[in-house]
Amino acid sequence: MINILSKKSIIIFLALFSFILFTSIVHATTIDYVVLDKNITRSGASVDLDSAVTLDGNTAVNCYSYLSVDSTYSPNDTYLGDSDPNSCDGVFTLPLVNEGNYFVLARLIYQNGSNPQETTVNFASITVDNTLPVFMNLTDKTIRNNESLDYNISTYDINGISILTVNDTTNFNITSSGHLVNITELSTGKYKLNLSLADIAENANSATITITIIDNKQAYADKQNITVSNGTIEIIVDSGSPVEKITIPQDISEDTEINLSLASLLDNGNVTLINNLTLTRETSTYNYTTVIPSGAVIIGGSEWDGKIRLPTSKATSSYTAPSGNVDKSIEIGQEIELNFSKPVKVVLGGMAGKKAGWSRGNGNLNNIPSICDSAANPTNINSKITKECYIDSGEDLIIHSYHFTTFAAYTPSSSSSSSSSGSGPSGGKIRSNIVIAKEPIEEEAIETPVIEPVKEVPEVVPIIPVIQLIPVQEEQGLFDSLTGAVIGVASGKKGIVAIFVAAVTLVGVIGFYYGNIKRRERIRKQIESIKK
Image 1 (cartoon, rainbow, N blue to C red):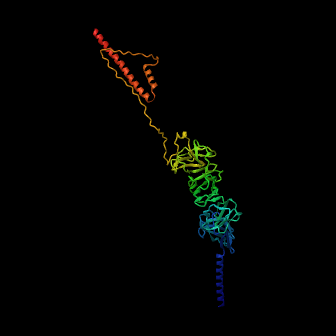
Image 2 (image 1 turned 120 degrees about the vertical axis):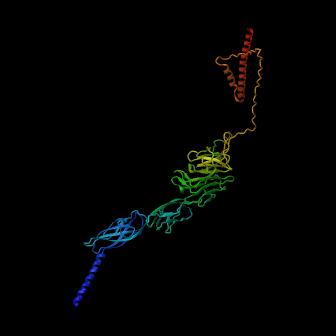
């Protein structure tokens, strides 16, 4: 009995031992875990893979890493690189792939004694994000030198922002809530700041803004309609300004110079305006207005500081018209030439009927000869050759131009206006230059010569006319003499009548002469017949 029990115990023990041994041989070698240093990243970023491997006496041959769309290995998976076979640790660079969710696989190949090579796999999930984070509605800011800056920087990224910084850390800081603030007292002037941000996936972006600090003589155009106050000499417009109309009221002298600063919008000497911009100078009598259309590019060049002088009245005595007198001169722009990609409209109030001219750099006005084919949108000017035109509209003189300068209205002298209209066309209708006499012009009296009828001569009585021969030059025949005499008096209406009378007379004389010759021949024949 004891022997039988001992044998059974031995068999059970051996079976259990074999099971444990088999189990340990089959499941001993594993990759226990795979951990990545980031769960969200971008294409091209490095990924640090950390794992743990249990070999349990087996021999590691190789460990490879892959990027897969699922958690199982496939020959179609994207190969990332080799890693330490004993740990499967490694650092890899993600290739350029589409955004989405992926798996990073660690695939271990090992040798189980004399058995063929076997593999085991583990993984970690990862999200690929290739989209840059962005700033939302980032604009320039203008404040007075006695104010503090507090600008909420708005950003967006689907996976979140991890970094937001400013380059000028001496004067500015960005708080943890994303507010840009000044940390020192700011002097009057401009501060160009570079803002940088990055998302969790390490996608980075940056933008530049300008913080302008103004004093009491400057004003920021923070509304659509701006009325200039007394003492203000400059209006600041930046990328955040909604301004569309700036008015200088009549209580500010019309010769006071006020500038419009577009310096914050300068880009390689040019400024592009998003909105229509109307600049008006009011006076006690008429207004003077400039309209710059939306989308127009102001071309100033490298020397332009971005400032434009608002319509300013200039002394007419400082300018010389092509002829006559200068009635009004308005300066708009700068001393340097400012050109436009679209024509601007200049309205000189109360100057209808005048000639238009322009001047730059000296007091001599250049006449504007072209008449606009439309008061609103002329099509007969361009930015190359014919750069200006003018037209009347009600009481006003309108000039369309591709450049800023001093524009003027003048009255030409009477001698000049006698050869051309003294005023521009009104409403696009061209006036004809017609001279009407004050008194009616009487028709000149035409003398008609009376031709007396030629009396008939009886056939029986021979009448031989006595013709007095007038000596003439040998080279001039009878016909030449007559035509020469006729031509000598043939001028005007009287000359034409004289030619006609002379022609009739000549025909009559020739007819009379030859008629008498025939009659004389008949009489001679009759006499000879009687004698026979």
